[in-house]
Image 1 (spheres, one colour):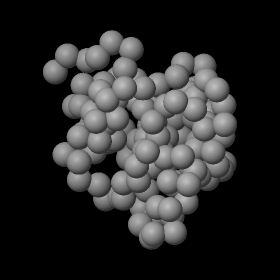
Image 2: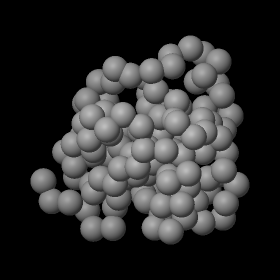
Image 3: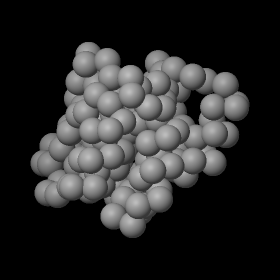
Image 4: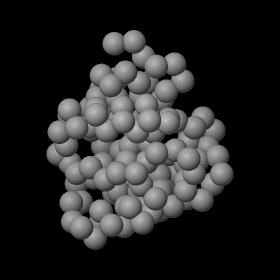
Length: 127
């Protein structure tokens, strides 16, 4: 599949293997994968080179994904970027907190690869 020019997906996941696995699905969806392992790096990279989409874990080593989401939503350069949580936390309180932080969607690990690919395409191609 041909990669869409300028269509990056920033994967924010502290587990390197899961980060790369999600990145492989990003590539299968036809987009360029960029991976980071903590919230601070995600905020810096998103501001410096805004991606088309951010896939964000909740449990990160330096700050929560909810905090990252709120910070990205509060900055003019990143407030428009769709954010999809991808987390093992599957309770309604977490899902509601993700939506309240400004996420477009909240997917639960283990995720369905086909659903992840559809979600990536839907949020990027609907811009």
